[in-house]
Image: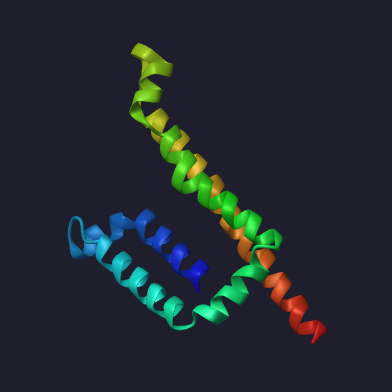
Length: 132
C-alpha cells in the first residue's frame, strides 16, 4: 500500500503537465494530497499488520531497489539538477536544455530501480504463493 501510494504520487508529479492541461495550472498537488491522506488513513488503520509487512519487506532485494530509486529520484536528481551547479560547471557555455536532459535522465534511472523493485517483489510474491 505504501509503495503503491508513493509510486502513484511520483507518477502524478512527473506527469503534472497533463493535469495542468486538463484541470488548470497548479492543480497536480490536489490528487497528491488526496492519495497521501488515503494511504495515511489506511496505514494508521492497519498499523500492526503494516509494521509486520514492513519488517519483512526491508529484508528483500526489492526494498534495496526501491530505496535506491527513491533516493535517486527525490534527492540526488534534485541536487544534481540545481542550476547553480550547472552554471558553475559549464560557465558561459551553460544551456538549460543540457541540465534538463541530465536531470531527467537521472530521474529515469531512478524509475528503472522502481521497476526493478516491483518486478522483484512480484517474483517474491509468486514464489511465496507457489511455496504455500
